[in-house]
Image (tube, rainbow, N blue to C red; front, side, top):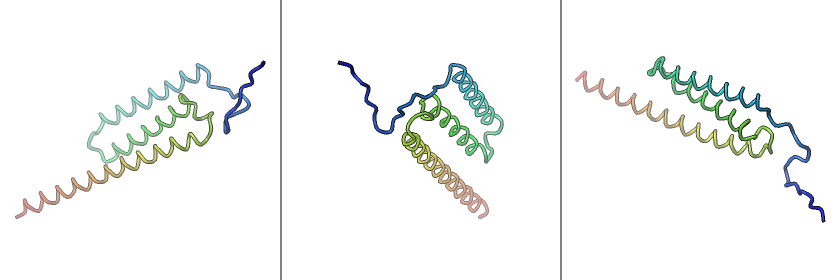
Length: 119
C-alpha cells in the first residue's frame, strides 16, 4: 500500500528553489551592514530629530529581510506574509504613536518651564 502525500490547500504543488548557502551568507552580510549602520547612527548624534525614524526604517527593513528569507515567507502562501506585514504595521503604529506622545509631552514640559521662568 503506497502512501501519497496530500497537499494542504494553498500550498505549492510544484517544488520551488530555496536559497542556496551563498544566498544566506549574503543576507547575513546585509543584515550585519544594516546593524553597523544602526549603531553608527546612534553614536553619531543621539539628539537628532531623525534618529528614531531612521532606526525604525532600518529595523523594518531588517525585519522584512529576516521573515522573507530565513522564515521562507518569500516562497510560502502570501497570506502568511500578510499576517506578518499586519503585525509590522501595528507595531510601527504603536511606536510612532508613543514617540509622538513623548515628543508632545516633552514640548509641554519645556513650555511650562519657560513660562514659569519668565514670571
